[in-house]
Amino acid sequence: MNGLDLLAGLGFGDASTRADWAALTTRSRGLAWRHLGRSDLPLGAAVETLRAAPGSPPRTGHAADWGDIWSGRSTMLDYNAVVCRDLRAGRPLLYDFTQTETAALDGGDTLFLPGSLVRGGIRETLPLLRWKGGGFVPHDRAEPLFLPLVKTRWNGTELPLLHLHRTRERAPVPIEYHSDLWARHRHRVTRILTTLVERAPDDRALAQVFSRAARRDGRVVRAPLVRDGRGFRMGDTWYGSAADVARTALLAVDAATATDDFDAVMRALPEAVPLAGVDVVALTYAVLGAHRPEGRPAGDGRPDVHVQWGALAMAGHPPGSKGYFARHAPKAAWMYDALVESLPWVSPVMFVIAPVAPFLLWAPDRDGADLAALEDLLARVRGRAAAVSAPARLAPEVRRTVAAWTADRPLSTALRDRLAWRSRLSAAPLPEAKLREPAGLAALSVAQACLTVDSLINAAAAAGKENR
Image 1 (cartoon, rainbow, N blue to C red):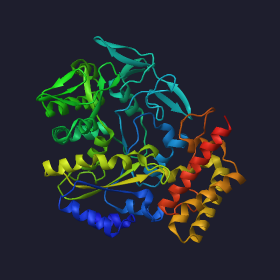
Image 2: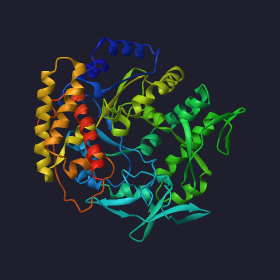
Image 3: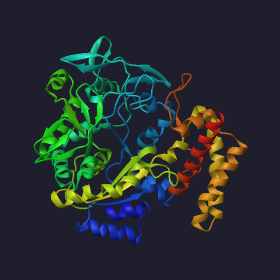
Image 4: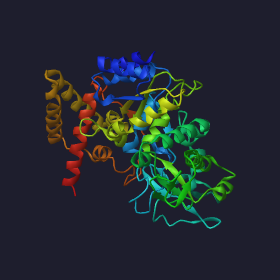
């Protein structure tokens, strides 16, 4: 399946897409992109296209305790299991450069909760240790800490927090971590980061590449990279070259992948390590071929289609939210252009951002009433969509349909909590469950499914305000 065939199979066989592909083929541009949430292709057909394509799109979650995700007990995070295990339409690529959550859950990664273990929706906080002076000391969790630089205690032993999560993971599918991907392609990542720093047209663009730093004590601070004479400055650290910035940034990979030598790695770290921005991280996944079959080279200069499953923050739930990738893409295009112009092995990228939003409608079998109710809603949406001839009328009709449905049947607490996308925790322990697809979901177009979820999210938000 070539790139154009894959795009057509996802509903992007139009003249505009072919023109963009031609521009990528001639390397006159480095990036074109499409949002799968706008596709008129049936959701089930889109999934089958991705299953039939070589490789597997990454589902970019966060490193943490995924036990509840695999056992149908993570409420709003269950979609990860749907995409990666149940549908086999993606694979977990876990970003491990996040931050531990605070004690008050008002900072850090409060969604995945990497500073805790979670079973049945009940949180068990882990003791955290941070670097101070020449060793590790207890952390009071008053502020978030950069995950690769944190230790914990488990069964009487001190060990890196990331190592604990890795060794406890019992995933039903293979998992890859961000740090492992970067470690495997260390030379190319160094060239990518060096080129972006060298080619950034101004300090605003430089800040797109590096705007934060992780200090050795675990704190993440804002420190936009700026030019300073013949070198670069980030906070109170000066770098003599772009390559120095890139090499220092890769030291975070050493910390994230260290085990027995973790303390030695920590002692050797500088006081601050630059952290690449989210747009740079997404770029590396595309350019390194995180979607490609294992064993194929990462980048061969020919245009490539990179599909990536994004959660609500990255891919949104169109039309109400298109996600940060779509918002950032126009301003991030210079990065792809710079790499294509400077590095012959870099493939120009057609980036397809795929929203997981429709899979919020899969329900655990313990919530059978919700599953039946959602099937009723989807039947109503399909009926209204079939009756609408003008595309511009579809969104108002679906919104009215969802509003009428929620008026007849208020959202259950479980469904409202899942759609609110605020916490994976539960007031009472949840039993393990199988995730079930509501009948009729696969027949909706991806755009119709996203529109339905968007309308339900708005309804859940309104219900939440009424219950306060």
